[in-house]
Amino acid sequence: MPSTSVDHSALPASGEAPPTAAARRRSNPWLTLCAVAFGLFMVQLDGSVVAIANPEIGRRLHASTAELQWVTNSYLLALAATLILGGKLGDRFGRRAFYLVGVAGFALASVAIGLSGSITGVVAFRALQGVFGGLLMPNTLGLLRAVFPPRRFAMAVGIWAMVSAVSTALGPIVGGLLVEHVNWQSVFYINLPIGVLACAFSAFVLPRSKNSTGHHRFDVTGVVLLALGLIAVVFGVVKGETWGWTSAGTWGAVLAGALVLAVFVRVETRTEHPLLPMRLFRSRPLAVGAVVTALNFFVMLGGIFFIMLYLQNVRGLTPVQAGVHTLPLSLASLVASPLGAALTQRFGARLCMPLGMLLQAAACLGMLTWSGDSAYATMWPPFVALGLGVGMVMSASSDAIVGNAPVRDAGVAGGLQATTLQIGGALGTSVLVSVISARVGATLRTELAGAGVPQALAGKLAGAEDAVAMGVAPVSGGMPEALRAAVVTGSERAFMNGLHTSAVATGVLCLLGALLAAAGLRPSRDAGGVHRTPAGD
Image (cartoon, rainbow, N blue to C red; front, side):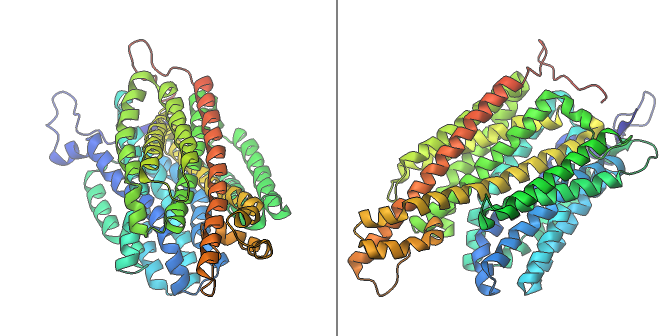
């Protein structure tokens, strides 16, 4: 049976020489946590700062809307295709080595993006960024699973989740400052010093960790099928908003991807050494954790997307001001991740996961009180509830997925968790944009007329639903002041209709996620509070 080898040279047998300083350093799990936090921070920060920089990239490089979408889509597709593969490579050949390759490659690809000078170059190097992110992300959790004892793993995951949540939430502030005061390239160049520091520190403290599996054939067929299936599904999801969710292109891509993934599952059950062992899904906490992780990031990334539209385009805040307004979300995540980890360690994921989803449901439903001129007092409570919920679910679901996988499959489990996270985030942004657009299209003409815009003009302006769905009123400089104010008011009302519909949709999904977690998870602790380690570790 395969086993996992970790450098434990700091623990010599009786009669041996005392461990060296290097051995003690590499056997310290908390130094390992610090090291992987650097890489995690870099990747998560990059995702949210690029969202802020996209409009400026489009202006400076004269990119069309379709080209600009590929700045995000190329990264998502490459990442989705490589996350599980990256975890498998780390498990087999060395988690430390592939983590370091991922960090270095991600930083260098970031520099190449800034130097490219064309939208084609940006898209190509963003895809390369995604590949290296796929090597980096799963091995952060794989390394933690290999070095932390079961009793401490939940707390380590809580800190991991805290770094992830805070870096994501800080992105709008950092990105706004860099775009406003430096240039769009700087949001990518910032990854170089972070990457250099991460490589230097990680090379100094990370232990060598991999599986002692002997020699066997690598599952090339599984790699190809999984990559093709995930690319097709994610492609259909991210293009759904452009093509329409009922279009043949969207359904064709998603169904083709699902069919390939079904073939992948069949092949994996018949392969001696599979890329993704299907036996992992025999663990109910792992399977439920994967679904809830997708829901968690559906709500988080989709919610942040329309919150930023509201703050910047409806309320007129700058990117920096919008980032400052969402600081309660960041601070709540900072508190919730270790709190969720402590509660998970004490009571298991069955408490924290439903509780976190209920907090997110409360946050989404709290947004129903927002209007085009709401006071900040109505905004920050949902931000706090959302941050608390996301942080708690992140800790609990990570423990449920990676903590319930055998150590030998830690990297693969980390890749599975990261894959569900990315698919959930891509779905959240795409689906909620479509929900807002549909609701705006259905109510824009009525809201414009109700605000005082003449019926004939309201009918013409109703064709600007795409702009209004992004929070932008279709006004022109030649409009009389009174008419201009009426168009702005009607457009705001239509956008808020879309935002409220999205908030209801996400709130209902959170309630369903809470029910799934409560019904599907069993207590993961015995009477003595000891984490049950899966067979085969």
